Image (cartoon, rainbow, N blue to C red):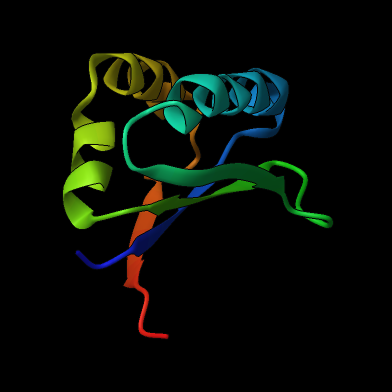
Length: 97
């Protein structure tokens, strides 16, 4: 199996920044206990405080997809999407070393 890292960028409207931040932080507990999760971290941009990045590592692409499709994550994403200034940007990377 190939290990995979995903990054997802979120840009919230200024008035929704705090609510968005709290929702992103609510991902950490459930996500970090899912099968195949190696790490799950949320970062806030130092200059553009309404921009956030989730960086998460998974044992395989299948584990990442199970995470994305899980009921709990789908429910949180449904709450986040209306707060964004633009669609979230998901990128995935396969470990090569």
